[in-house]
Each structure stands twice: as C-alpha cells, then as structure tokens.
Length: 161
Image 1 (spheres, helix red, strand yellow):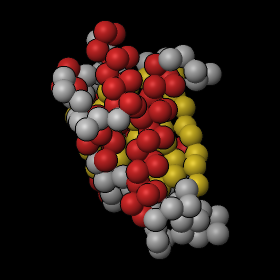
Image 2: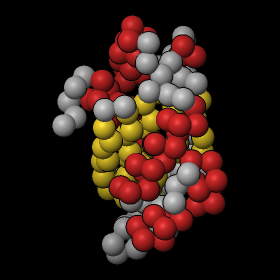
Image 3: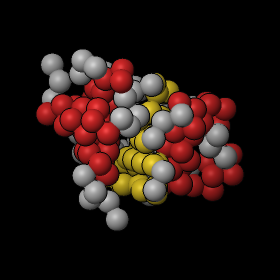
Image 4: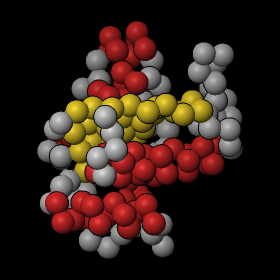
C-alpha cells in the first residue's frame, strides 16, 4: 500500500510530465520499490540502479575513482555524482541517490553506523543531505528511503535553495 509520500510524489510528477531515476547503494532498491508502489508510476519512473560496490558506481553511474578515493562512497561528493549519473543513464529530469552505512557493522568514528548521504540532481541544480540514523539495519534503510522521497518532494515544492 503506498504511503502519503509516494502519493505526493505522484501528484507532483504526473501533471508536470517530469521523470525521476534512482541510484541506490545502502537502500538496495527500496526507493525505487516505493516509487513503483503507486499505479501509474511508469509514466514518470524510467528506472533505477543499485550500485552497491564502488566498481558499479564507477561503471554504471560514472562516479570518478578519484571522488571515491578522496571522499569515500558515503559522502556528498559521491551521492551527487551518483544522482547525476542516474539522470544521464535514464535521461530523466531528476536523479535521486542514496549511499550510507546501514549497519550494524561498517562504521568508523568519522562515519558511524547510520551515516547516510542523499543526492539530488536536476536541470537547475544539485543538492545533498546528510543524516545519521540510530536504528537497526532495516530501520536505517527505511528512514533513508523516507528521506529520499521527502527530498524529491521538497525539491518539487520549491523548498531547496
């Protein structure tokens, strides 16, 4: 059953004839899954990719190896390149990306478990958002997918500067 976020996304995307593509790492396709929970989402969702490894981020999305070496997979720089790559790959108006450390392992003092970055790329700009969730792996993935959908809605409602 679609949540209000998915329904709100539909209400913004369909009348504007906009398209959105996803590039996901830690969420494993959950954002794309949620977008497609809404009947008619094929009108505005051409597709998405799960790029869990750095190699697939580079090969499929064009994330620079230099970016990954300098900033890591979980960074503003990487998610912006991922979002840009998703837009290009699917010829979409909007690209949304997620990369994070879902847990329960994999964290470090500078990037603890729950650290998540979201990237949004559109024709008129690019933005990144940072979160640190405190839930289980499943909860962190869900919270990241919620934040990604809200990020797109905020963009569509003109709330990003």
